[in-house]
Length: 68
Image (tube, rainbow, N blue to C red; front, side, top):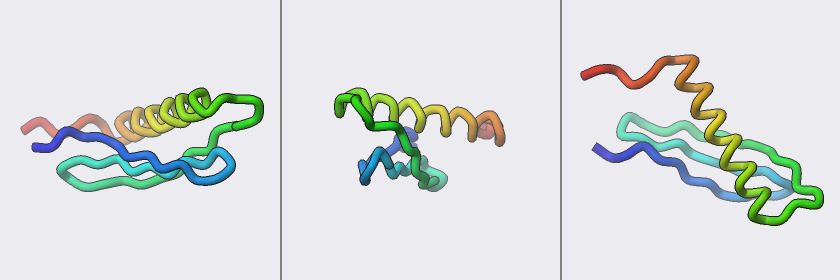
């Protein structure tokens, strides 16, 4: 069983494309973060935090993984 993870690719103007991957499939999306007067590290940290929020919202909406 592979460990669930995500891949992030930065686009333009604070847009970050991401894909959440697991053994059951993948979900892709985009988050947008403000970039004005922020360092590259701050922008990327903000994007990763938003991606984690999206993943948490998905778990809250559909529940955790099935018990096997």
